[in-house]
Length: 246
Image (tube, rainbow, N blue to C red; front, side, top):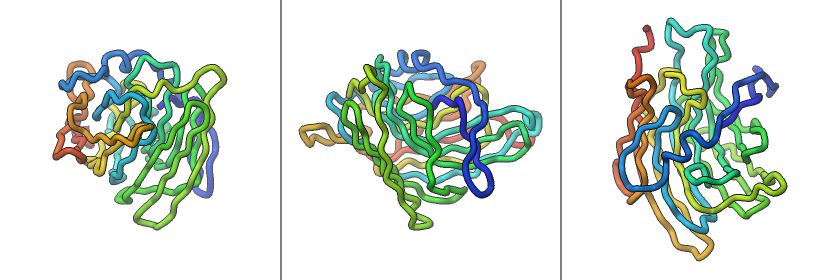
C-alpha cells in the first residue's frame, strides 16, 4: 500500500502525510514459483493466475502495539487482498484494513482501497481489533468494484475504483498480504489468519492457495512475519519481530 495520506479522526477521516510505497522492489521478486521467498515489505501468498476477475478472503483484525523504543516512529501495517501486485504491471488494485501509528504513541485502525498509481482512499467502514473482515474485489481493466464487510458489526460497504488513464490492470496475479510499506520492522501484531482465500478468472475457473508463492517479511536479516499455510484456503501470518516492550 502506498501512503500519501490517510489518518483517522475520532469521528471521521482526514489526511496526513505518509511515505510513498515504491512498487517495483518487492513485486519483481514475488513471481510465482511455488517456493518460499523473503521480502522487506510483504508477507503472504502470491498466485500467478491469468485473466483474474475476482479475489476474496476473510481475516481477523489483529491487536497492534508500538515498540517502546519506536514511540515516535510512523509505521503502518496493512492487511489486504489484491490483483496484479505480484506482476510487473504498472497498476495494482488492493483493498483491506490497516493499523498505524503516526509518531503520537497511539495506534489507529481503518479500512481502505487503492488503485495504484492513484492515491489510497479511506473507506467509511469502521474496523477494530478482534473484528472479522471480509473483502472481495471484482475487476475489469478500468473500473473495479470493492465489497467489504465487517462481519462482527454486520456493516458492509460497496465501492467503485477507476484506473488511471493508460494504466489498466494486467490480470496476471492475485495476492493475500500483510505489508509494512516502508520496510521498517513495524508494529507488533497478533497472528493474522486469512481464510477462505480464493480467486476466479473470466472463465469461471477458481483457484486457492495451492502452488502459490509464499513470502515471509525480513528486515535487516531478521524475520518479522512468517507465513504458515494451514490448508488450501487458509494461512496464518505470525509476528516474529521484537517483543512489544523492546
